[in-house]
Amino acid sequence: MSIDAIVDLNDTFNDYFFKKFTFILEGKIIKEGRLKLFAMKGFNLKFFILDDNNDIKNIELPYPFKFSKCKSGYHFDYRLSAFKLIQNPELIHDLTDKDFVKSRYYDKLLEIKK
Image 1 (cartoon, rainbow, N blue to C red):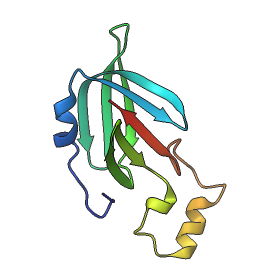
Image 2: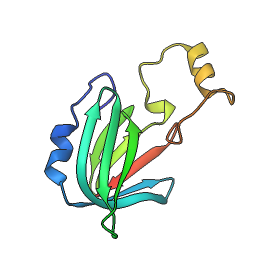
Image 3: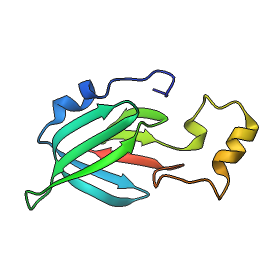
């Protein structure tokens, strides 16, 4: 599913409360714990997770360019190649310019294992 078909992910993640989630970026675990709350506001996603010490941590993500379900969980694709709406080569160049302020998720694939 690409960004041209925005999906309310509340319906997707509401079924997973108190289930264990692991957020993996470039092969490294960046957060893990049981899902306590999920909120979607505009193009921002916020996951509140309960870690092993019963502390609530959160991870805030931009809405992915492409969202897909896989055997182990979900993929949030932030790679520029997944951003099919961009048809302007000059804009693509600007987005890939080294001086452009980037999110840590920019041009990467985030895996959410459940």
